[in-house]
Image 1: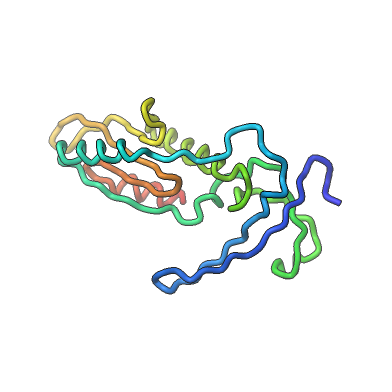
Image 2: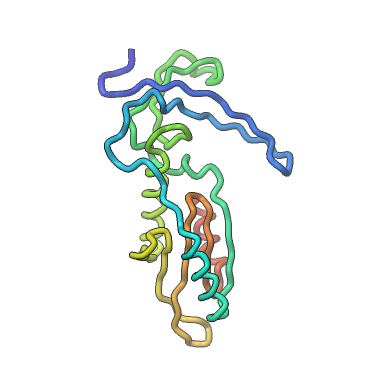
Length: 179
């Protein structure tokens, strides 16, 4: 039996071959076996209109645009659910034990919200503010090399990042170091 207050979830491996022929395997939890959460469970996304406005701002202010994808994003966030799994053959020497799930695995009901909250904290730590009109548009005041004041923007679509700055490489390298 699993301990009181913890949900037992099963899982399965999903194996994939990507377009560049790299291979990827993910352990996906069976979140359908957990109780329905009482709070938000998804990760919001930036709107198309915000992206269009940001591209216009970039063009008018001569700013560079750079985008990236955060690989295995959910695994960077702590798990918000009390879940355990019984280990089987795929865990090798750890077979036959209870394992506490400490990362937001794909398949868990609150993983999307956990990832969004984790990335939002990172953006706050980088001194960005969330926009009231679209909470997935992040901005901060900056000054260009020629002395012109402007706003730097980071737009987020779950794990896809779009940066609009004078030198977007700096923010991307910071995020790359964290994720």
